[in-house]
Image (cartoon, rainbow, N blue to C red; front, side):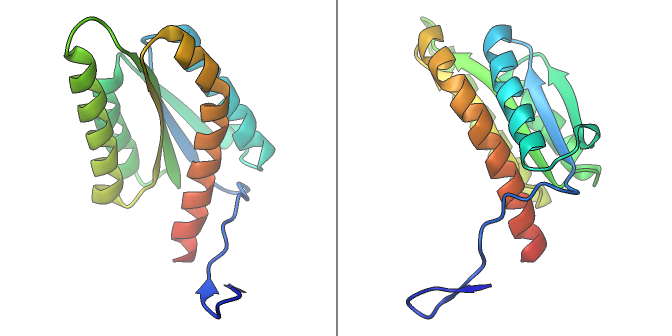
Length: 156
């Protein structure tokens, strides 16, 4: 624990991935975008010390199927953290809002119900151009989030 200037003990964030087991659930829709997200996330996980053999990938048809796959993975006890990867791109109908909202709610519920952190890298964008522009940074960010939350929960 570190001591802050205001004399409050603080648990410091850690991006040390050594020894962590990470599960990734990936949608098959918008393949080029999800592949870009996955590539950035995998590279970042390895860079912070997660061994490639400690990363497990499952695929699901679309974003609404992510929470169920993540729940099953979390319940298995095999993973220190999980990552959800996908891309929901707005179309001409209200379907976008339903998918984006229900998917995000389901992912949050998995974390709270199981105690296993889930990094959410499901892009919800207006168009494909926005998704492509965000995929590399979001892939890196979600890997850092998963590792940091796994370490935090081990410390707590």
